[in-house]
Image 1 (cartoon, rainbow, N blue to C red):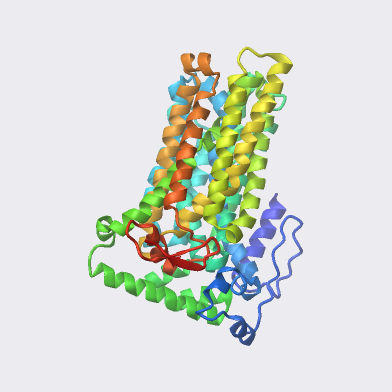
Image 2 (image 1 turned 45 degrees about the vertical axis):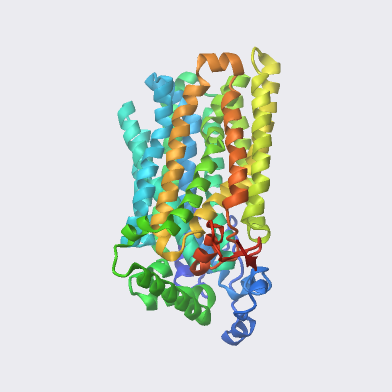
Length: 556
């Protein structure tokens, strides 16, 4: 582990400081990056699309040519930012294996158990809501550094907590870090990525989140394997929580090496620094062109504000609330799918069916693995198929998976022994169907939509509002599920199936919302996003875009 961290530190230092051609680094067996060969300025100019060739750009015939960009550099800085996502996944999912032992250790009621899980979301709400103002004032990079330090404090403190109150306090601090990272990491990646690579770059955030979840599922299982319930309740849960310290330290070390967001640099008047970063990503001409686009967008924003307070004007702008409503509902429906019941409470749900904690924790690993595979599939399809088609297919699949899960849970009453274990595998099958469809659509697409749907002047506040909505939904579901799941009457009547029926109904509503209100954002420059989204506004006349981003006509 030390050798890998040392190699990674050297690699990031050399890449970010443009010394990769001469750096004496041995190849890392765990990491491979795309070639960094860049075309000459003449070749880059010859291959640049004309402004009127919009359809070709959208279809990936020109701008999707990754040889025009310094892919190695882009992957490196986005990968470092995505470590915030890895800690997001690790921190939120570690509780899935620890909650049972924690409940026994502190002798918690069902409400206190829900509080032990969901209190993190309160911190997330505060962190997400404050992230916009902090990122606007201090910059995206310094905000990520703050998140890294808070992650570390939380991991150490929660692992050694001597009372339930202190455990809640340190988990709350971790929630603030998660809230900040969940908003600022994708914000940073959306602002450094070329528009037609933005979906794949932002996919790194969600891949990192899911990878962090898979890692902790495996770690939790290995810690629990062969252990007694008494040891898990006394020591095991502390080891699970404390294992987060290692990725926390890695994030703290490498986040210092990434550059600041070029869009934020222009906002504070550091145009030369912004052009330098953009030049590293796509060459001098790309840097000049994007810098001009950012300046034009910000100049337009200043004219619209007319000396008014930025947030105050946004609050009075009906266009902002229309766009924010779309983003907030996407965030709400992502949580209303019930995904975090699968992630936080999977060992509890499967343990109730199988009657075996170790088997339940082993089965939980496969939920994370399937989610990771689904995210990789979504990463490949998101920029090719478009956001809206994937959302539609994924939502239908989620409903099917939830109904399968509820059916097998409903039939699990009174089973024991091998029959109960078999029913556990059948229940897992329904959960896996749900997780696969959720992963390539909502898991990935929701964060992409929230990150890219807002115009420049709205992005910081709009993203913080949307992510805050996500965490409020997360909190309410995390707090309410144990109460529903342990309700004697509901358990007797439905054997744990009732919450799954509720989630399936909410997903059906989500499909209707996507069909009527979600615009296609694939291939749309951030500077052009407002007109594209307002095509869905009642009475709007802006042109809309197809799945691949081409202009296809006008709305009513």
